[in-house]
Image 1: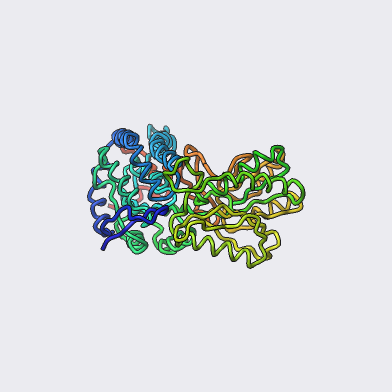
Image 2: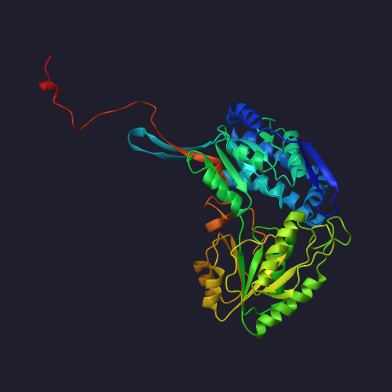
Length: 474
């Protein structure tokens, strides 16, 4: 059976390939694990540095493929390729910092040693919005720790996944150490259910993450790291520079056509004139945003969402908000019939009594007006998710309170909700993750610590609870 990938902007067929066999790919990785794990970490690190160089030398081709398969602008695809390259040195530094060997002196010349071991074979399920960078954020630290990997890219971006794995192999990573599994949700479930994997690293929707959590409920011996979505709040409060606040709001909501897990979904503002000024400034900027195909000139700010099904879903969610009493400030339009281009939209949902707590994965931002800062924090926390949050404006004291009281894994001040640094931990709480932050902390779930008490000479004694040897019979 074949799988096809289509360019979102044009509908043209971009790639086709045969659906793979999860059991066979896991078996290949299982066979390769002992030899790869036995290599010194310095050898694995140098191999991954060669991978970074191979990616760098293929930057133009790789970026164009990402842009065409996802629909994101070429300039943004180029930054994604850069993130793939940079991930190597970041991961090496983090691995040495978080999983280095430690030794302590103990009594009678003994030593206490802490070293780390790889799990074995790890499955990686990648998303379509950052089809190279996000799975690579799992793969690099997993390989560095000595694991072998079976990577299943999203069925919507298999071409990027195939090229990523090919570049690993070209750099000298053994073919068995990183395997590609082509397929859809059925192959993903099959991979997650393989006895031969020792864990699964997933980036994707909260619904899929919940399903995996249930699937792994009776397998506590297998590591499960979940990076999920968010219903992220952006609070703008007494911002001194309304223009800057508007720019941050637009960047947060509409970058990548809103297809970032850290994108702002809810804009929370103090009701009154300042809110009206902010909205006017945002609308002026939104009028200037270029929506076009990824290789267009001049370059667009945003391209289409991934496919027509995704566009239909975003439109349906936006319509539900309208039916529930939302006041449309800027419509969500579909300028090209049959193609998944969506214009950036803004809707005031202050009067919507029961706002759905869900992630709208597209360029649709909800405006919520509140009377005071207490209400702003309460509104920010009115979600089961907890990935990203940002405060624009406010005083240092208010940010301290915002940081303390808002539930999220990424909390920013006078910065967008998106664009988290790769050299810091990244993850969320609630429905946004399972407390296994990635990025700089990925080493924590790619290797496990082993504690050893060691002595060169065996010494032993039992000092209590023994009978007097003189009282024993012959």
